[in-house]
Length: 448
Image 1 (cartoon, rainbow, N blue to C red):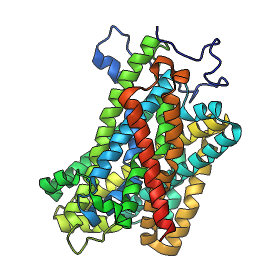
Image 2 (cartoon, rainbow, N blue to C red; image 1 turned 90 degrees about the vertical axis):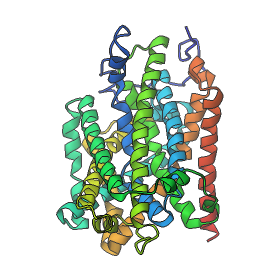
Image 3 (cartoon, helix red, strand yellow; image 1 turned 180 degrees about the horizontal axis):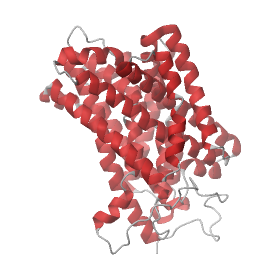
Image 4 (tube, rainbow, N blue to C red; image 1 turned 60 degrees about the horizontal axis):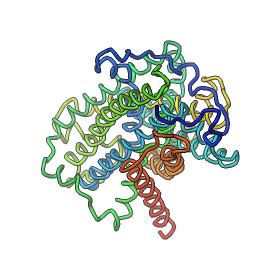
């Protein structure tokens, strides 16, 4: 038996007991017994990774990927690749925390840190969720405008009503949520498979785009977009979300059960984030093939991209499928954003609000600035607000990553399940790179 801390004789683990994360869904989904086939056991964990991967292809990603492709061609593909590799590692560590410690990242922070520190971390995380929700609101509103001609301001207001849809879905179990998310994810992937086919990008240019480009250190705009991609890809609230929803599976809470669950959940996460990588790369590649090096090179706006895709590519469905994928992306992110908000509030504060109230508060925080910018500046202002929301996410990211690394590399907290070797050093390296890039961005802004 591996040594697992957290028993009565080990007082140095967590300071206080907590209620289960997402108590109504915790250990609610059965898994196949050990005697069953590997495919059946893996199927029980399939869906968790897609719930997390949704956050890696939300409307915020669209804005940064479109700007990157249109302005710099394929040059920032290496940023998407590096961000996804960081995401794979960090989400694995979030899974490790949830399965081994039996608590989510927010609960772990509340138990480990002092109350003032936990409160500050909670506020920062709420800001990140509000920024993410802002992207969802704007993305869904833009999609409604493009598909149905609904004015942008009214589209923003309508998105506030999706709280009722989510509450209805939550009543029918967690597996239904996962199935709906998977359907929308497949829709997004199919739409962009068509866009790639229609765009006919340059394979050699794509291959070169995966090599680091030194211009990022000298071009402030390129750096700004790159950090926006990082913030849109490695999303802080996803670390809280993943460490929680992995506990919805009823795996045996034993050493052997945890090891098996960790292996299966990591496979699920890796495959799902690989799909998210395809979507992000496809958005950038489509923008690069359609707009870079043309008179439309300055296109960094979803509205303009929608209007130009069909005439530029000569594909009749390009613009329509672009908008359909955007709407699916925004609605998908609504589900995971709501769950993340619930997990963060309950974990940090041990406070349980009615789901409709929690969602309404979060939506209002996003609706107010979105409506104000839409009224004052129109479509252009909305596009810039979308990119800014992703940079805000990136600036908050170190405050989630460093606690995650501290917990999952600690033998006092994780026992024999503590991350070691290359996983440990790659994780800390990712955390330092993220913090360094954010510090560099702030320095650039401060010095003009």
